[in-house]
Image (tube, rainbow, N blue to C red; front, side, top):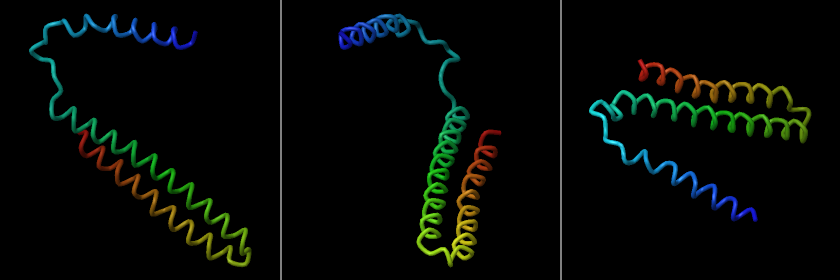
Length: 104
């Protein structure tokens, strides 16, 4: 039953979208270089933010595991973790700077 409903939904969406392709193109329609540059910068910022968050999560998890294994080394591990997090976060900030420079 679910597959029939899914098939009918997809068929209805495809049939409703068909008239869009029959329209004549507008002379001003199209994507310019500025829009593509802005789009690329925004996609890059999204990737950088997501991957920086993943890297920070792995760094904190590894530091917590290291402290759990050797509580005596907590100060050294914490210092290196904070330094590493600052470097990771600077990558996202540099990417944000590039987005602002390319978007304007």
